Length: 226
Image 1: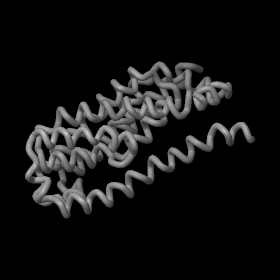
Image 2 (image 1 turned 90 degrees about the vertical axis):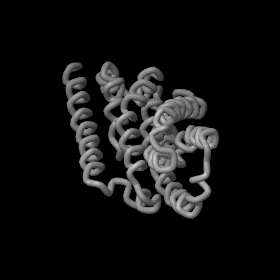
Image 3 (image 1 turned 180 degrees about the vertical axis):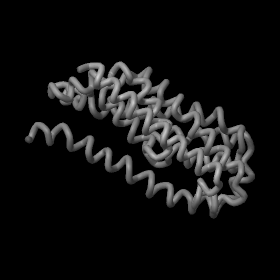
């Protein structure tokens, strides 16, 4: 029991942190952006590019979800922010990976592999790793930093984490930027980012694609190993 507690305490505490912190941080940041909207409206291209790259660290440290960043930047800067956000998301994923490895040193992966049943399960889904990561990142309701944290802890290959994360974030990012460009007031945008009928349908579609896709892929992978 002590051995289990030793290996699970840090991941469990970290997981709680990575889920709760973005909710609290975005509440405070929403107020900040609403109060300072006139100031942000004066930003030029260079200032927005510099500001955008702060998202690498805020997303990696679970301070802001990518969706929040895309909504804000889409509102203030429009479609020009889209390629920047793709780069920011990719670099955030890489930074999360490096931080987790620095803190964990693959201890959790070794703990999982020491359990025969857990090891067999991980081996079963390893061949579908890229698909699983991509489908997970498609869902707008699964926390960005938390999922990357889990993938890294589980020992997923970095190339799959980066490629799957990049591909999965494309529809979410495009949808959020589009919602930002359509908003008339930043207060309403941040309070209800999916106010329009199209946004609601699109979000629901992404959730369903992610959920059913993951069920199908994981189920097929597990059955294939039996």
